[in-house]
Structure formats: C-alpha cells, structure tokens
Length: 115
Image 1 (cartoon, rainbow, N blue to C red):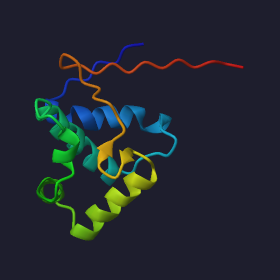
Image 2: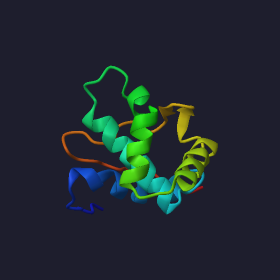
Image 3: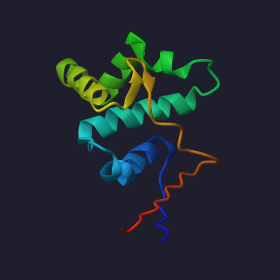
C-alpha cells in the first residue's frame, strides 16, 4: 500500500514522525514531534557542515528552535529531557534517528511477522 503525502520540505519531518510514532518503543508527544522534526530539518539543511549534531545542540540553535515553535523555556527544556529519556538522542547531543529524506522523498516500509 502506498500513501502519497504532498508537503513542503519544512513539514516532511512532522509527517514522517507521525507515521512512525506508533512503532517507536515509547510514543512521542506533540511537542516532542515538533522539536525533533525541527532538529531533523536543521540537520538536513546543514548537511554540508562537518558535524551537524554539534550545530543542532548549540545554545543559540536550541534557543531559535524554542522561539520558532513558541514554546516557553521550561516546556522546551522538559521536551528535550523527555526526548533524552526516550533515548531519541544517542548521547546528550546526538540524534538517534538517521536522515530519512533521500532525493526529496521518505519511504517507510514495515514488515510484520505473524507468529
């Protein structure tokens, strides 16, 4: 089954996370999806930079993400803490999820085995 979703590049990560959310060990909240999607989008835009993970986790970048999503500082910090507890970050400053966008497309495949 194929579901085509027409979207713009800035929103593709939100769609991607909404699709895979139910298959994650611990589901993400709305704010977690927004923050993580924004981080993934930034990582994509700056993919030419040597270590995009360091860029994403700088204080200035996190502040821009927090302000662009119109989240209060405590809510944003709690969201980051929650993502860390859910092991979405490999380490304190590295995203676990790999870049899903290839040639402006995301392909999500599921294989379900019945026992």
